[in-house]
Length: 360
Image: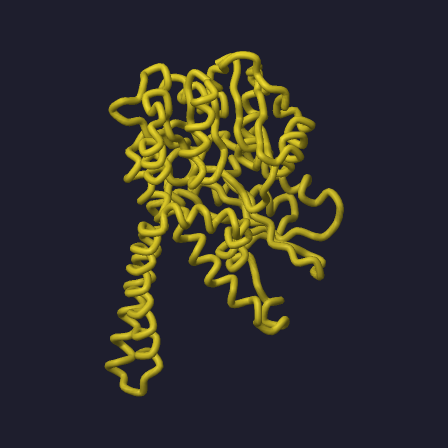
């Protein structure tokens, strides 16, 4: 790939452009908002000047509902030899492209599993896709060169290609992305009218659970609208489970001991199934979270404490898989959660305690 056009210079589009530009690809930027395109250009994502000839690849970074129309327009203009998109839904845009008589042989739908709560070109990063899955949904009429071009795009962005059908993709992201966003919003909206004293007690658990609710509502209306039936079906199943939870909790508060026991069994089954489901989510190198354990380390609120902790941890020879800092602004100390392989916990704990650290 020597040249590309990125249509849409939001968070994902500009991140794609930055990654390609860093690999020596000549990137042209297009957006209905000229200001966004100029910001992306100023960040080094590419140029807002128009290409003088068809580029190798056009990447459409626009909402799912616009993919079909944008594809038809850029193909009519002969903008590129091959086309792809980065939308989070695949079935609807594909149907739109067929209905508009687009050249589907030279178009392959894609979806990088990356993003963030912040939007716009200023939030973009060239390393946004490093180590992330990038789904491609070729069909029986997909041109081989188009598939290869899309695979080259994925490689240049540092992502891992995953090939699946469009319907399978929409069901999968409905489960792992779209439905969780609704659930997070349902939990987070409870804080809107809650007493300030109650909200002030929020810790890292609720912050993690509600984090994705901070996304752009308008963007998510578009995403959910494009995958509405799948998400509605999943939420309907969750609704049945919630009714069982309410019944179980009511039973646990009953005066009858047999009902309390029945309620405890029901809630216990739910929690065990939740734990089992959580353990199926792959961690680093494909391992589940059960492969790691978290070691808490108390840290003072003085300059250089984090640097000293990481230096002392590195001397133990233990690889730190993940780090989480729990530190309220009105506290003089915090808790650093270091995630390491289970077998490495005793080694790390001994090394840190030898250096005067207090662990949990």
